[in-house]
Image 1: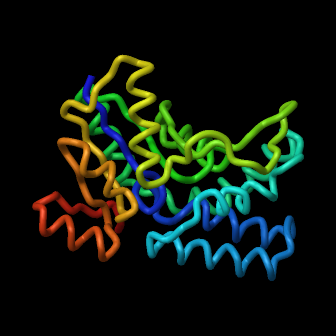
Image 2: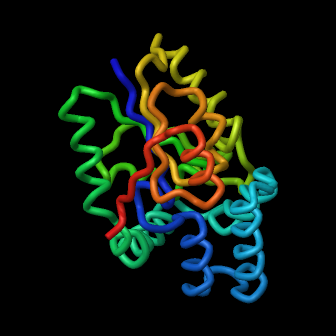
Length: 218
């Protein structure tokens, strides 16, 4: 079956859920807002430059949920979805997903953002298959440590190849939609790379290589 693969942040949604989560926990008083907010902004700038230390960032992002009960986390995430994610859902993204469904393609979201943040967003978008950064869970609670290979840059390719091997699938005819130059390793692996509202670096590369450039905004 042909795969239609999608980045999440700034591709299928009109913002970065990881960055927004950092702002949310500050605004809700769940962390030391001054220190956490500064570090959240710095990590986001590092990501934009392609210089993110993914292990350090995951430990930072997973810190606020470490040790919290599933009930507490469910309440936090329900408020986050209502206040931060619903306003940035993109009707054109929903139409794009439906177009691939109508063609019989299998939909997959692959994101560097952790599963706690992104699983409810993928469910809201109606996409069942999700590859995301994983957090360690012990006795039903997050420890604050990352687990496994992060789905970031080359890690997206590695995790996707593992997922395909487990299912006996291939990348033949696959599509991949992304906004970020950080996703070049995977964009270069698929038959149908598409730049979506791309950053300046990806826009220039897409133009050079003749990749389609589309917008899901507006």
